[in-house]
Image (cartoon, rainbow, N blue to C red; front, side, top):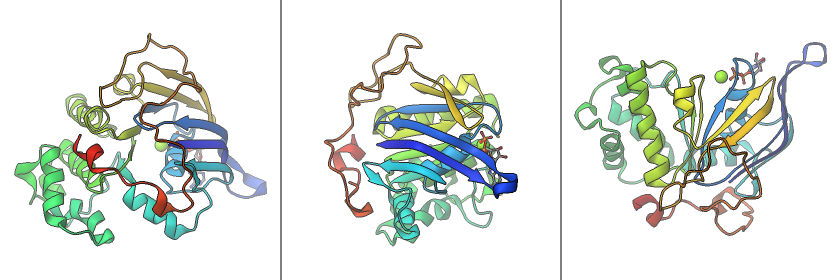
Length: 272
Ligand SMILES: Nc1ncnc2c1ncn2[C@@H]1O[C@H](COP(=O)(O)OP(=O)(O)O)[C@@H](O)[C@H]1O
Ligand SMILES: [Mg+2]
């Protein structure tokens, strides 16, 4: 699904150059559940932003479903963000004046999708907010606001959900609720989830942990196989990841020539 080859991201000019990411190679397959850890400033958010097409590599290639998306025009990248990716942030990023229902409807408004109200309401029910759909952020707890943000990420039926410190602003118990929701996405809905966290207990939900330092990956360990429709298979604890191992949900390699050719989720996948 995702392949980074020598991805570098630098900020600033020659005189004050900051290398946020220094030549990262990484593969993530469909159905994986990945936690990214590492000290503050190690490049976690930079890498997430590149994967989510919110930012571009300064050097190196980024292939998504076989398509080099790092250098696509903004328009195509925006389309990919809107149709294929879901985003969840530490600070929820909700709009203060909108109700939960309106927040979740927004990505569908941009897409001019049909049945927006109904789909938004269904997404909110999926995250357990049936009773809160007409509340504004100020009338919701932190955990509820993050669940609205998760519903907003799900309403487009994404293939991949990117969550940057999704429990960072929540207490332990509320954080656990959010992690159960993200885990359900992988195990029940076959969505690939990549999350950033500082907390080992949060990372322990994921099947694979990547540790970063100084803009590079210093450790990459898998605990379980990627999810399939039969659920995930436990691996021996901490066994090193075999990059050549097949990824169960990977489709046949057909390289798309445009963003439109990246397959949307099939009805079977969505309803599974
Ligand atoms: N917009 C920016 N301008 C300049 N430097 C940046 C910018 N964004 C990030 N950096 C630098 O890149 C490095 C990695 O940042 P980041 O990816 O946010 O780390 P993390 O998410 O692991 O805390 C840090 O040294 C940070 O200061
Ligand atoms: Mg960060």
